[in-house]
Image (cartoon, rainbow, N blue to C red):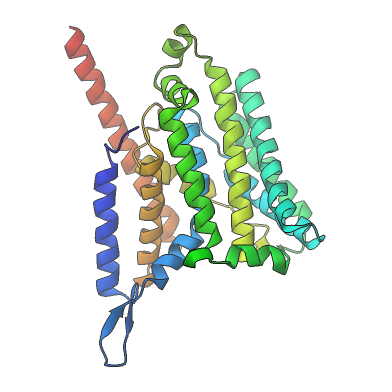
Length: 326
């Protein structure tokens, strides 16, 4: 979809947050030899680096929600795929294959989720909730020591900075661009919006909603596999509790970014701005020394607020439609 809706507002809000953080905290500012302060973008670059996997995961979740579905297994899937990446890299696999392994595992998880939802006719909430529990137990079983490290060669890829930009950001940016173009200009993208808006109407014009639900959940598994490879290469040490709350973070970012929780409306660009907003909010909480236990509460409040706006917008459209057809 075009650049409209909530995106311009989020762009302004994010810019204001950056200005406020720069003016009131050490974020983006450092002292110089003369006793003044000069601009330093290293903190902003670090923030983007650390959230590269979140950007990727949120883009995948955007397509799922656009199609009118949800995936609660992404946090556990991220953990399992990252563990796989670490273990195969320690086994001496070549770095490209070590990157490919978690992507394949994530795609397999998405395949299973999509097949059960689309062809087993079971609601995605139940399917992915069960998958979340299953995968989390598997992660704990695979990592009894509590953590596992990647190889130095694998971690070196994540820490590399071609042209001064980290590999993680290059991957996230390329992935987001491809998905944004596909959502806007391909038949598959148009069908996702159609199914999310009204699956019954989409079926009347020849679109198969269950096939769309299968493909978006399959693709989301691929996205989580890619995100886990980026995460593992970036941080190098994988704990068996990683990914807890990741599903809330992704869903909140997507909905704050303007994608309707009911499906059919939203954009990848809005989601990216939503992730950046939550990253800046988290930085503000840290700089202003607000206890970490409030982070989830703040995210939950933002999610409820965004859903409330979405409901109000949906009702306004419904009233306008009834008025126009009266």
